[in-house]
Length: 171
Picture (cartoon, rainbow, N blue to C red):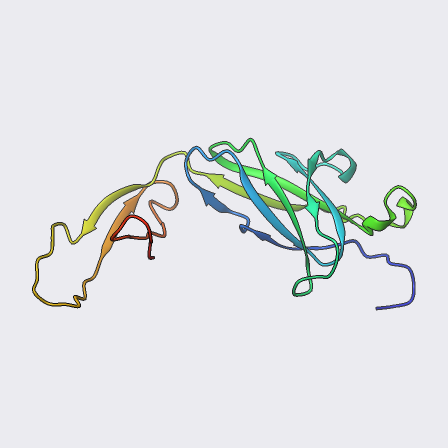
């Protein structure tokens, strides 16, 4: 860290969920966590890129000490529609200087793009194995379970889980 003035804008290090994530059919909002490399105030625009001051989406950033070298910011993305939903994020550093020394603050003027994809078709189970009740006198029993899905993402790519008691699910 140098002794001169801070001339470097904040950088968005990561998004969670990651950009390009697919959401289930009819989901119209999603919580987003973004990590920045220094304390910041962040905003976003939906659909089209805009300058920081014209961005109306608010992001809540935590101050204090970093976690693994980054600061976490949170927002709820709303008005999601089927298909790709594009967002553009920018951050301004030194939130402690807000309203008293704005000229010393740096904005990352090149937006960081982000997208969420809402499925327009539901995910369907195409096939399950085994197909019928299993009867055996052995315990414990080792069995391979499989399921084939279709729809939504890449023809049905999915992560599935199962439960024997409808309460605790295993992947």
